[in-house]
Image (spheres, one colour):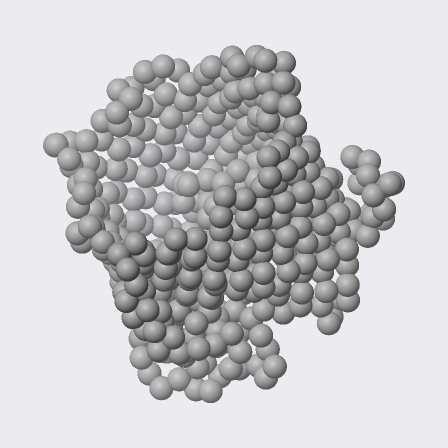
Amino acid sequence: MRATAPAAITLVVLAWSEPASAQLALTNLVESRVGTNPFGFHLPQNRNELYDLLDLDYTRSSIRLGLRFESYHQGYESSASEPGYDAVTQRHAEWNDEHLRVRVGNFYTILGRGLVHRSFQLPGVILDQTLARARYAPSRDMDGVLAEGRWGPIATRAFSGRPSSGEYAASAEQLLPGFDLHQGMVSGGQVVGTLWRDARLGFAYARLASESAGQRELGSAFLEVDPFRVAGVNAVQLPIYVEVARDNADWGRGWGIGVGDGDTAAVYGSANLLWGPVTFSVEWKDYRAFALGSNDPPSLVREHSYYLLNRSTHFLLARREEGFQLEGSYTLPAIGTITANSSRSDGHSGRPERFEERYGEVHVDPYGDRRFEGTLFWSRGKDEFLSASVSDRTIVGGTASMRVHGPWSVGVDLEQLEAQRIDFFRRPVAHFVDRYAAISLSRADWGSIAVAWERTGDPDNEDPADYDTPEVDPNDFTSVVASARLGEHHDMSLFAGERRGGPACTAGTCYVVEPFRGVELRLTSRF
């Protein structure tokens, strides 16, 4: 799917020519950067890059039109293997009324909790294409038709289209003859009935077809119920959710909760207790051969906002992984919250593997208005999966922020990681320590400025200039990050320094960020 900038201009002109009842929403993200990947020996040392992402959304009465335009160019004459691009990467037309919504073009949807199908995007995230140098907004969208309806207690959803893996920029279509960002075909739908007191029972179906994998049919059944609500008790809440999905299953048999060794199936369950200041949740998963490409089962790994914890996350191995997650918290009025979490995942990719984490956190907010708040946390665990290969890892840290004068506030973040890296046979390879520190100054409605420093002894992150030394030399990453609100419609952020590459997570989805050294300016505009 490719087009040029005039298509976007045409939509703008059309929208402004409509009566005042019509609405046009515009969001534009432009990012300019000068620098390089310090670990990319083949890349220019002062590469100039310009990326732009424009989203237009036009609504009039029951009609909605949308368009996404992406552009990427390098500030030097790129070779045929690294072309820039200007392309309309998404477009849609939608109609809806009280009972029905129909969308043609690009869309996102989910069946159940994502075991059978989930298409999604990661707002604000820009990644680097590994095929050839290019930047793009990752989007696992569908290109086809989506219809949703609701009649009384019955809600239905049906769709058919070609899925995108979200791994490529539009320039990949120029590099690979016959390649399309959207490949194969996925068709499916679900029916959900609301029973007594908001209990829900649903059934989902999906058919996957591709030239490489042939055709597969998947079914899912799920139940959501709160036994206390059903009993008429409102002081305590206990929502429970269970979903079972299978490949090529007969609806009359093979729908037990367990998953056998020879099955292609997935089971997910969760329960959440909310009782005054106490909250407790438990989740369980068992996935076998269920990495389908167009689905996204819950990973059951706690997503952390703290820097070293976020980059130490676990990547789900849905082709064979089972595990659980437990979390509880207690809120002390006028003091803060205590949280504890325990998660574990067991997998097998040529050898047994285990991820586990025990996490504790104390958050203090004595005034309840964030005049002063602080957090202390501790994490202990391991990740023997090949993507991490760590047999022992401990992370400790703390953050604090305080208002010092009117709208001004200062913040401090201190973290340390100590880990043991292992090889395929679980033999110790390297013991290393990471340290991270950041201090920030912010003013409400203006913005903030922060200075961050990180030192790592991880051999995978050693400075290339030190490769010829016999010992692993620590590598330092220092940066300044400034953000500002430029009026009602514009936000700006500036990064200068060196950013360490590695895992990161947003909204439960994990990806890999490329290392960068240089200056990066990002401007977001909304109208």
